[in-house]
Image (cartoon, rainbow, N blue to C red; front, side):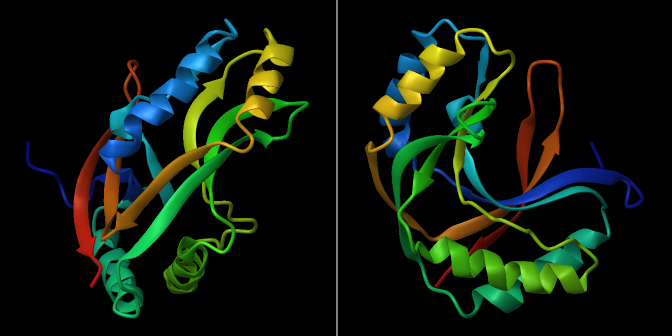
Length: 191
């Protein structure tokens, strides 16, 4: 299907997850499934670290975004990320999103800040409190909240593992009743 240049697309910039770490993450999801809570789990093929959610953009913005990304990443080489700890948004009293986090001081923080400065020049809002995370599930109701909280606490200090980030991807997100479908629009290689 050919894309019309006037079409808008829902898009975001992301770091893809190393597939070798998926089994450990699925083990964490299995533990949350034991709570019998109303949680919609993120399929492993959709797991990623979001650097910027653009929302709906005009197709012709893609090149401007690509130029901004290329300008920033020329100052970055491949880097390692260490996935560890489990948490939730917004807090343990009102649990909406279950996530796995990264080491403190991760290089992703500076990369995101540098990208955000360039995206602001394109008219996008700056992120206020960027917390790099890997969403593993979305809580749909308060059912069994106590069990969810206990499982989060059980995994607060979990170590999932390291992986090397050698590229970032601009993705198109198509919402369907079965969940979002992500497609790469552009892939940016890090040195």
